[in-house]
Length: 259
Image (cartoon, rainbow, N blue to C red; front, side, top):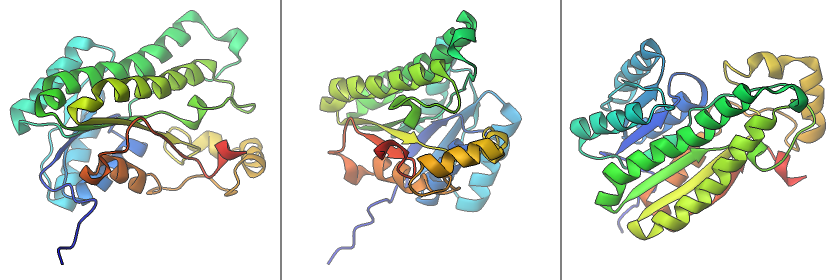
């Protein structure tokens, strides 16, 4: 009997945005652990270079770190071109780059709202569009994973962030739209909706006593997400074996959105 390796990604290539710290790096490691070559993309060149060196040393995969600002269509198109020049393919896209404006809605400026949409929503679209057009549609295969948020599915009473909710809600329905449009090319488009995870950006907020009290009353698992707990979600949606999973929003939130 032939043993299937359901999550084997040997020889495949993944482009991961926001791959300088936090969840982006964790998911890149998960894919590299299954043999996937990684293109770490972010604005901070020294950080993606360090990530690339670590992935090569720890997992023996090939990497191509590319500095890119996803608010620039030209930069995004050039990044995808560099990836294809190096590897000739992009099998997986993890759209992870994002930001977050926290302030009462009545005090949010036009600039804050516009920036949030430009990075989290339009930025994700720019990258998906370029990868699909240049790599996945010609190959008639692809796995696109948009990192939305549980805040793209619900509101919240603890951290006012209307622009973030709006942008991630947009990512959720954009995911459905792209899944419907590109499915016949053999491309699946799905979204992961993380809950509260420890990252360098969230550490101070999550450690505050007020936020911990809030978490105890709203998260059925009664804790925050820990490093590695997004890995299998990313691997599942990246797998060639998940070819009939399309247009799905997968919350990884300890049950926050189920109550």
